[in-house]
Image 1 (cartoon, rainbow, N blue to C red):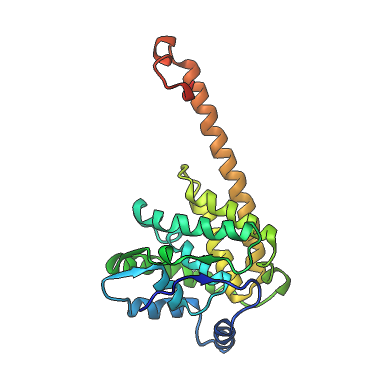
Image 2: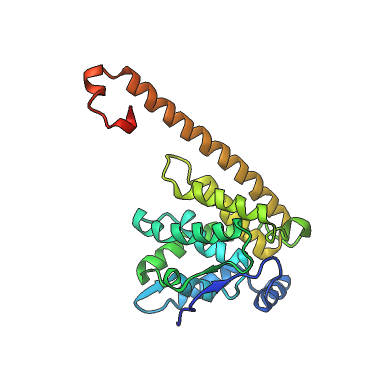
Length: 239
């Protein structure tokens, strides 16, 4: 499967492939998990790239690209593999935050890849979670389902992406789930799911701030209790 040189989304307006998929969804024929299952059954030989995944999902909408980038958050993978997705999601959300219409992923990021067996394991772990979420989704509350063109939305996604990437204890699961729910809400045009994901985003940011401040306080307390002759051996930035 050839990988496109770059992938861009067009804002709130869906592309024809999105419209076609939505029409099939209305008749109960195909959803995102169905497309992902078909991709799983026909993985490219050798290595599987991020571009392969996005191309297989079938459109260039914001929800589709965010879902492709956020899959590792609901399918635990080794740290080195998850890092492959950290830079793309930060780059993409940063473009959104700065108000760039038609934000794109460059070809060198789309060519980032994992082995075929690892891609299969990642999809297998993600599928039960995706299908469980999809069962609760349906087109509704169109006002919330079409906020992806707002600049503040891009800022919020960037902050959410940062909390997914920074390796603080216990802070990755909530923003990861919020990002996946947000992606599926945009794809399915479910405004209620988007609204819930925004509330989870705020909760994730608050929780992240609490964990970060607690760790900072604990570190300062530990340093204060350290005997002077040991404290003097610490680097200056830890004093």
